[in-house]
Length: 217
Image (cartoon, rainbow, N blue to C red; front, side, top):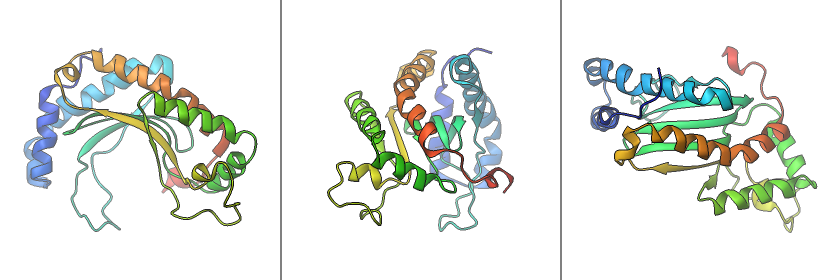
């Protein structure tokens, strides 16, 4: 099936879940989640597969084993196309609207050390240019960062801010306005992912393979 947009019921579902994140609510509205959230997300990823590759939707359940917040369900539905370990393209629907992002979201194994080695060298200048271009395009660049400089890094290094990163992501969010209920969402996501290609490509080449055991856990 072709993606037609996220129906209003998808946003209403997450508004309700935000007010009552319980098994009772989930069970009563499971059919809405399947038909109006998960199914459109699968259709959207299917439409984008020709250009970006196959994607998958994340499970709606939270891992609460080590979390203070014991709410059982995620307050959003994410879809992801992975191009390298922990690097790829992301799209999300929630009560806040539609979010699109891309980059390196979760450091695995020796990835942080590789990333910093590359950023500290000549190739780091390219990432600096990519980040500047994304900012100019209206993308918010962020990620997990150290509050202080990494050990052994010159405090006067010209790319100190990038060297503080343990992950690098960029994205933006659109409010749930009427157009998000139409196929236009697919083109917006496609255009945003195209804008993110330089970042995703650079990171995929820089951080390298991650933890080989992470998929078996």
